Length: 154
Image (cartoon, rainbow, N blue to C red; front, top):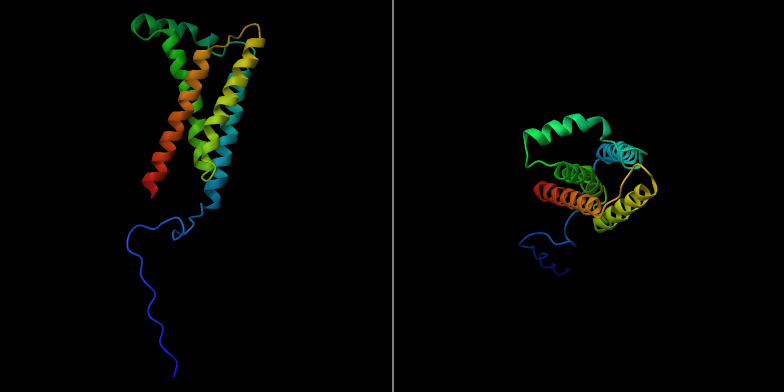
């Protein structure tokens, strides 16, 4: 007669990395993220690398807005637009690169410095440190929102 082995101990408490089942993202979601990143990349390239200011046609509208709302200056509108421009960068890449999310912020810094460097070489465009700050801030907000989305899904 063989001895009976004692039952395996049961784990109490939240799962750890070694006990947690690996959650796989559905293939359609990964493809969707890549499609969104592609569309965003094309839009970002067009806006950032366009040889003339992209807001030139909006100048009458921006002037009327700043006249109606004096605290909403052109500089504030431009800063907010730059924050919004890089929000998808942080958000989409953080969702896509689940395990390597730590590269998103350095990548945003590299991309925005490259864009501003290119704009400094073009006669009709101007580069600005504030644009870099706004772009990186937008990427940080996107990273934060993506992290909150992940947290809410768990």
